Each structure stands twice: as structure tokens, then as C-alpha cells.
Length: 155
Image 1 (tube, rainbow, N blue to C red):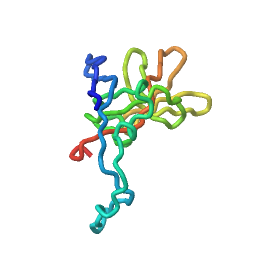
Image 2: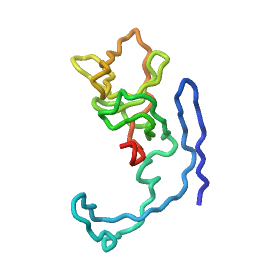
Image 3: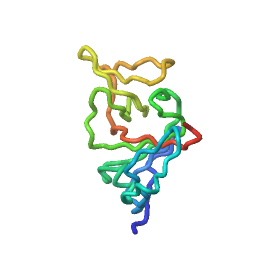
Image 4: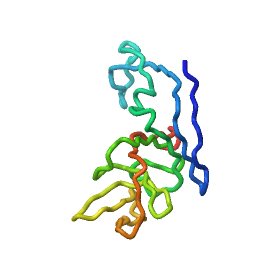
């Protein structure tokens, strides 16, 4: 079994950024049937296999990192303060994808929107306006959000 190693890259200005170097081989029970949100079901009868959470959550281990969220600009996308994002550097920054960006010396997570030949970073909270990215700005996409991890009580 591999030892899990998470190296902190940056903890400045309230950001917590972690790079994933190695993963524990964690196997958990996987049930082929769906769980009922209404009446109870006997899910134990449908145990299919065990799956690796690492394989499920991380497709490109060497190009994946995690970031802890601070703020509420993306709450309507279920990205809440304290959530952990799993981010893949290899995915393309396409319209409609949620991306971690470095914009004018600030880190942000927003939805990429392309409208009428213009690029916008759009919040998922009506209190925050969309940001039009212009040529005068310095902007780099640092990866695409693939999963959002929240504690059950934070949902």
C-alpha cells in the first residue's frame, strides 16, 4: 500500500493549495444498485465490487491537485466555503467548465463563459458580477474542477 503524500504549495493570503504526489490505495464497497432517497432498500444484496476512490476521483494523478475554497462566489454551483476542489491540469478550459484561474495576481474559481467573441469568468452567486477578461489583464487557467468534496453537514 502506498503512503499518501500531500505537499502544500501555497498557504498565503488565505489560500490552501495542495499537490497530490502519491495516493493511498483505498478500496471501498461499491453497490451497483442506486440508493433509494425514499423508502429503505436492502443494498447489501447488490454488492458488486470494491472500487478505488483514487481511480474514481483522479484520472491524471501527476496533473491533479486539490484546493480548499474560501468565499461564497460559487455557492450556487455547490462550491461552498471550506469545500475541497479536485482540479485537473490536463483538461481543456472550455465554455461552461468551472476553472481555477490566476487573474491579475489573484486566484479565483469561476465558470468559463464565451459570449460574442468575449471571455468571461462567471460567479455562481448573483451577488457577484461576471468578470470580462480583457487583453489588458493577466489571466491563466490553472486547471478544471472535476470534483467538489464537502462534509455532509456543510451541504
